Length: 346
Image (cartoon, rainbow, N blue to C red; front, side, top):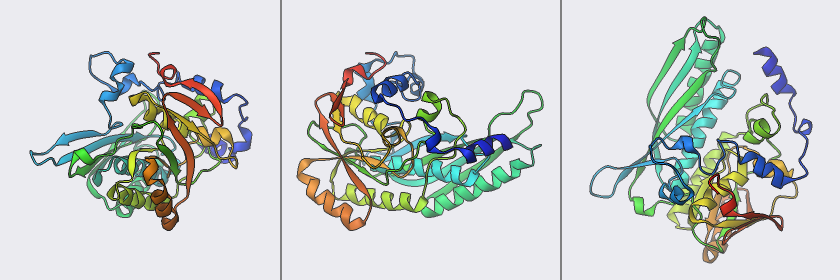
């Protein structure tokens, strides 16, 4: 454990070779099951998944349940985290709850309550209490910051003498309220020509990313950059943008970073995207880094000026990425092919 923490402390972005061929990186990462545009593990039915059926589930891993005939619904999602929980349990727990809250707000649901289950804590390890205490602080701090009720929390202590260590894991479930599901904003791009914006800070950070672990084979790195105050500001902005009806779609930047978040938004309706990257950031960090506190938004051309004015007034960093295409994927004026080549079923 101490060796892992030391390697994480010594990790720097400069130690990661910058790839010269981004297209090669993209198609190398496409075989990662965590990033596949058709992730077979996300569907537990016996019906085979095909590219034609992707658009049927347009809520991006959030379940919707009707409460009554008035149109009111509940939104629910489940998330798990084990990366670095033993090293910084408070920050890891805050990141997990921030992710869940941001995803629900992108949809247009109001996060209401969270429950947490801390699993695989070795009672024979003195560090078990440190993990439990840190996770508790992270849960409570995130709940207060994001105005969430804690509906339940449990801890499972294990003894691993017979089968070796199992990494500590925290699992959370979040429930949100939906007044009218017809007003929800899904993650899928809606229309060719729509403007694509990134809100939140762009950073030179690839820590704990799928790109770093899968492409470079580096598993020992710190948690991604995370500022809970930035998360709160972005979440408040999302609430207002929904009220102003400026958004066609909204996606939290998640696994695989910005590129794979764009890809997940493009696939359901067979659309593409033409983006320009930030020249002040490393290209791989900009496209594949998984720093927290970022959201991709689709804004109709007629709302562009109002959106820019609003974001400027809120003093929240934002970046004009580009626009939605009929199907081609372009990065910095270079074509990466078409969306139908970006699915595992193609």
